[in-house]
Length: 115
Image (cartoon, rainbow, N blue to C red):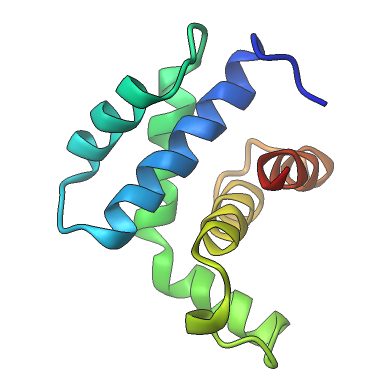
């Protein structure tokens, strides 16, 4: 289990909350990030990592969703739990489009976020 003070994990939680917010609203990502930051109790975080994840997911959303559809054809995007979908999108964005996150870290973080 991740420590509550792990800034990178807290950044991913903030990214999850922000992406989830704009998934259901027409709100700009900045407004969602501010709202999420207000509601999450995260003292330490790496804001640049949060911005990086949110930007990558937003820029590559169609491609990420095609990857998910191809990997899980029996689970159409609209039938996947929205939280699970956002977690999958974050992991794929970090692993495939980020070139910063090792595969093991991306998978571990996705599992931790799902918990």
